[in-house]
Each structure stands twice: as structure tokens, then as C-alpha cells.
Image (cartoon, rainbow, N blue to C red; front, side, top):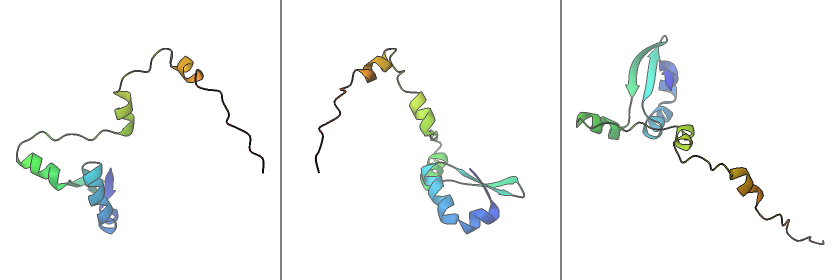
Length: 89
């Protein structure tokens, strides 16, 4: 995510929170990248020379999982067709 400097200043709490949960946040001045806000954990890892684990998007997380079985549609259609009981009011 890239933040214009004015927006980053106005919403600094959000910038810091996103740096902790989503990864580095870029700050731009007149559209040019000028700074990166990172979490303290990432900073300490970089300082210690450790590789920083990149955050995955939800889509990446789902796509790297096991592939769906070929008979997935059949498995879904095998579920109970029971609609429950009728209630009288």
C-alpha cells in the first residue's frame, strides 16, 4: 500500500497498524516513494540479518493449498437434502 505523505500523517495510527498486520507501508511525496513504515518485528529481523517472511494475501493462501478433488461437485451434491421440519405458528 502506498500512502501520500499528507494521508499518512493524518492516518498515522492506521499506517502503523497496517505495517504490523499487512507488511511494509510505502509513503510517497508528490507520487515519488520517500519512506517505508515497517513493524518493529520486521526491523529487528532485518537488523539481525534474518530473512523477513513476506505476508501472503488471502487469495495466495487459498491457491497454494491442496487442489480440489475432481469429484468435488458430486461430493457437494451428496449432502443431505433434508430441509428440516415445518413449524406451525
